[in-house]
Image 1: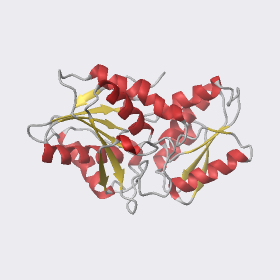
Image 2: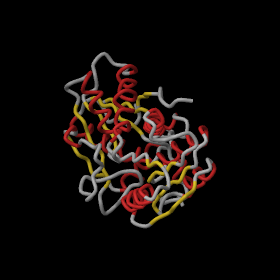
Image 3: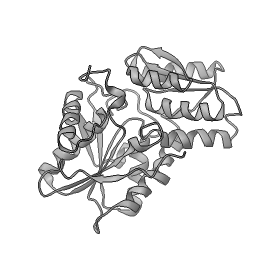
Length: 286
């Protein structure tokens, strides 16, 4: 099953009066997140280029979702898979990774610590590192896939004035921004980011010392910093208004979009990375 063709729906109960907000629901992908898209592209490109041979081991640094997408492919195609992940990754993600047969290597130092350790293991010959933070196919999965679906499925005669996406590896934000601007040159791009001192799993701040090589933040006209508390609160509000249980980063994206539209008006598209099921063992749900 190839990822993609996820629904684009209107959040009519969440949008401020006089505005319209649409969201692409990425938990309809095979393992429940937007990361199935780059995992598919990065894996198949590695095979086609000969970087990954049949049955060869793979290794990747991930806070969860990309690792799960790659672990699925590794199980289908017969590769040993090791995921280096931060200690604070949720138990649900760890259980899913183990269910797919992945070896878990838990490290301190958050996502950056996981990247450093995965690079070390790859240099020692422990496996092919996909390296989602520097792999151009992460961007291409959205340039050639996600953004074209948004344009194809957009239900209004006039294009959206705004697009909101979370900044994590930079693949989602960069690829969609380029793809949407190809079709809608005037669309305003909004980068939704964590606060460095208040991290949200899977998201990143441009204030972080490490910036993914594939990220092009110059594409973003606006930057929105969202605290984890605010993101969690928005998750609850979306449950109340739309009946959807979104993930924390999705809550951050909706919160940024709703706040901006309430002040400035307009019509916006947004991308919601995943649902909330993989976060139940962490705060605030625990």
